[in-house]
Amino acid sequence: MLFSSSSTIGSTQTLLAPIIPCAGAALTGLQGTTVGGFSGQGEGPDTLDAPVNVALTAALVYIVDTDNHRVMMYTPPALTGVIVAGNGNAGVEPAAINTPYDAVILSANSHILVCEKNNSIISEWINDAYVQTVFGQSGNSGNTIALLNNPQGLYLKDPDQLYILDSGNSRVLLFDLTTNVTTELITSGVSPEPTDLYVDATNNIYLGDGHQIKMWSAPTLYSAYTVVGIGLTDIKGICGDQISGFYYVVDGSANCVKRFVVDGPESYGTLLAGQCGSAGAKTDFTLNNPTGCAVTADGGLLNVADTDGEASEWYLSNMDDLDTWSKFCTEIAKTYSSPAAKQLAAQQLQSRRQGLQESLMHYYNDILQLCETMDSQMTDQSKLIYLLQGLKLSLHKEVARQEPKTPLEFIQVAQKEERLDQSY
Image (cartoon, rainbow, N blue to C red):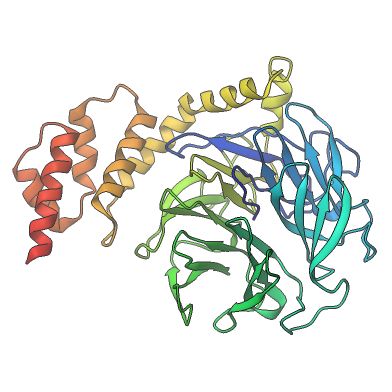
């Protein structure tokens, strides 16, 4: 997973993978467009081969082009990119990288850290120039405090706190980029080859483990418990921000992305992208074996990797009009008024239920966002129907009895009843 002030994520498949950013306040009914890899699988400036991850800045897109052993930088809406790390050949010498699997952006001028899985190192690059090996020894894997074994994930929190998913050693390390001090945070309870990690605002650590998500609670990180163990089949990626209170899980085999509440109750999650269970027809609303995701720092932009889709057709048919980055972003946002997005929001409203431990305000805001996506002119009466039908049973009867007339009255009544309920 790549995460910066604004980031996206790519794919781990051997086929060309469109990189699909999806925008919108509600993050529902996502539709995307390709921003890298237009001319098929290959090693040219307009092709990719198994891109694993992507990071998006205000004007640039960085793509970890795994099987080409390089990191590419694109300036949308340009169709071609330039190499900013590696030389296209797998190797251990400073000019080469070997199977890049993740990256984080440190600053401008293409200053990045690259997670080289097969070299078992974290390397530093600025403007396509190798700087140093930040962590590990190139080509020398191990399980000591100074070595890595097939690292697979990075998470940068604050300017200098780098979390490393040392997959081959089934552990999580914290490396301080300022002091160069390494701390083993998690060394037990991790299954072999975990797939991705996410660190929330209170420093709880989440790891992808096959069909479930495990969380280690800060500050002790002593033991893990399963926070998502139902409704998932093949976790490929986890991502989240530090503000919204959500995190997102990519289910590769089920072809979908789901949203969960940070430190919330175990649940099936809320479907955001894909159709869960089937790749479906190739459209900008379906996914085929997605492998990763990332969100912007404020949680307002979710980015999904799709290994097989028709997103590029939208771009190619409109590229002549997308002559600026702002226009490109505007056109992406317009996709949220599409019929498919409305249909998905309607389906989610029908099945949405408040979790036993889910906060009332979280449930309320989510329902209203779905209502806005489904119909921006929806009446208060219709919104109240959806708000009431999913309200947890301990509140539903008394709130319904008082017959609120508007969503505002609903939340005021419900909060009052919740306080009374908690006082007993």
